[in-house]
Length: 311
Image (cartoon, rainbow, N blue to C red; front, side, top):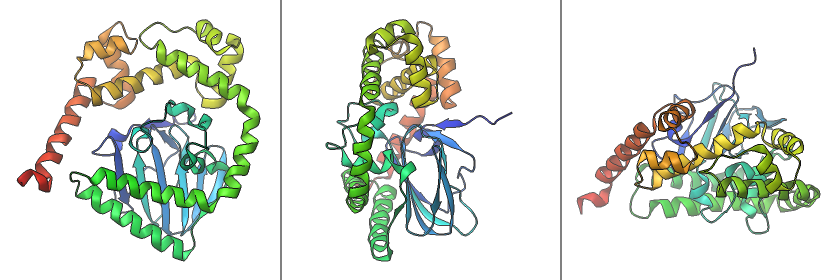
């Protein structure tokens, strides 16, 4: 039997829900194909091996960068002797104004968000820095790591700036290749528009029962074609897609609101709170209440450990 591909949230892999950076010294590295609900960048400092991303296999060595979109199946190995930085961040951290669900990021307008291009086209390009560029990148990453480990009043703003500097530098270096790929992908605009209509419909009706027939009507497609399109673009069924959107909304409300869990359950389309709790626990490895408590513990720890707390 083919092993199940696990999907991870950032809170399962980090103490924070917004941003994380680590090096090869961690003992919680993943060694099987997986996907996660957040962005990730890996920067190679030593070692030579292959990365697997989507349906592609591409070389990875010193100076290589791997840009991973949320929910894209991938594996970047960590063999003995490999050295690297691994950067992970939520969509809201770097793209707070981007009105697209994380499953629809390939449909973003790259003229407005060129920094998304390396993530969208990673399967088709090898991103690599020469020694001079890598030296600059290492400085940026070291600064990010320092701010992350010593979070203070404006640390997240600094981290966001460093992260944009890194991603946009790569986007500029590969501008010709990325714009060429973007022009070719414009031929898929009809299917992209249909998926965007579907996403808007799901987002607007998240608290209601959502059927394939009604969703297909909103997307201006037949139910059979919509089911096929979803499977082809996301690898999931219609029901799995809707459930994932409900889970993402629940995670966001638990993280950023004071609403009661029964209210969140209803807003996310679950009439039975016990069923919601069970689905949430299956998806994230902890109950909604435990997740909220987990966030509260880390927020308290961050406040008490911050240098500003002693002022």
